Length: 528
Image (tube, rainbow, N blue to C red; front, top):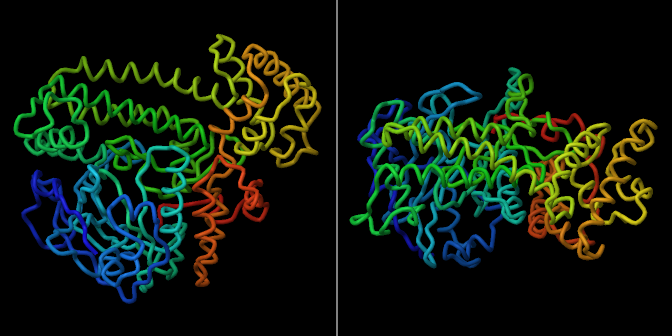
């Protein structure tokens, strides 16, 4: 097994000068060197063939003992120096100080086919940023991360990815609902892959500590490595970076973050814990913890039990939360720019462009290409109707593509399967739905496209299959019994979420009633 190493992060940025792996406050550094923890009996459960190819490995490589040991943290690959990153964050709206990679260890960086990748293990042991935790992860959360990061990629959503999933052979103590009843669970390790795992909090912590020298080095490194188009030269020694570059950098981060969150809204994904330490500086979906997918369309829903009371990170608030997080990043970058105007302009533009982006996204879900002023009212009315009674988001929009605008009174036949209790819909609500479909039919008739064309267009943006919460739980339950076939089935199903895949039709269905209030299906925590 040969890897194409190119370690730029550790060679260009300041390291923690304390080598001892103990919890502590780290100063004047962007990372700390640390070795993964040896595991009792590692066992590879699943690998992604596509990711193997992307990082320059083969399926034959993945079957080797070296691969197993390196990608479970039991062997440090030659000429590499694993490290954990230092960052802080605003958690649920409050500054939490230094956080960092508490259970993630970056193994090395790879350059292959002119692309750079950071390879990271989640659940590979404690780091200086673990505080009082063990730095480990359990099979339950690892399956969820492994499947979801790949599912998001194939949905077309910016995301970090997953190369492999393995058991550690160790037992890990976890209190799933933080109710004082911890239990031992199977330990696991996910290998994550991304161009970078830098977060908003990576910059915030340096600004908070008034370490402007390290902050400038980190921002410059990020621009040179990941936003080279913003400078006059891509060669670090000749790069011209000034306050205008920093402002342009912030603007591009805002644009990418907006693209990401609008895509979340398109498919009904709820991140669950949108703290600034969970916001990628590259606009990628990162840190798959207590996430969830909308079953019934509910703007107020969050899967995170920790957020159940205030619902700060609810589905309908995600765009606004990204803007709030961008304000915190702007505050961190301000000491380098020393001018607020450019930052404020970007933030003001985000507030306006996010409304336009959301409107355009919803138009695409409804099969509308023309832009009519009345579309705002049509979409607002639809969102009201969707919440009149429990209505499955994924099934509703997928089946909507088959609506016959020439016969609007047949609407119930089109979307009936999306209702959880169709027999309980009141006459008043039926009237509201009928009125909406009549307006929608009139609007569709302005498009001048054939029903077949509209169906094809809508099916490209409205997935048939998403990783519903109960699907993950079924795979987890089977894996806890030692069977991993369902992980593989879901992995392949979710690689083609927009295709019909009749052989997997059983997964195109509403959440079963047994999963309505089951832990792992409707209630999730950060205990992973």
